[in-house]
Length: 64
Image (cartoon, rainbow, N blue to C red; front, side):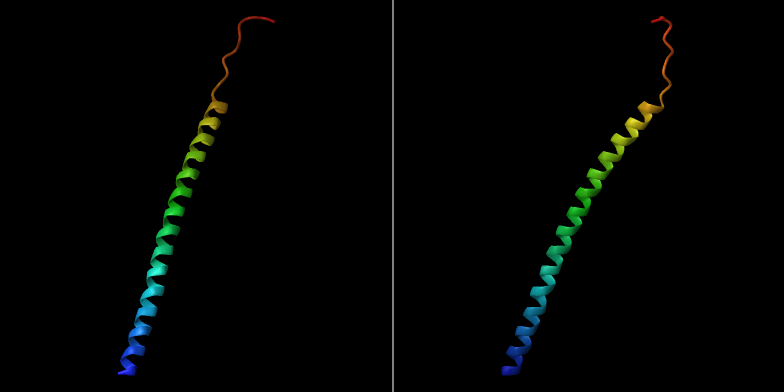
């Protein structure tokens, strides 16, 4: 009977660690998703700035 309890406690211990790993992996996945969204927004801003820089400047007809 003692052996069954030891095995049961080992199984519960393994399940506990597995559930912690699953929770941590979900947390890390969400963090990666948030970081990728932030990077995407920053990249979009950089592309907009680059496009604004690359636009041709219209010459001014007026003299100073």
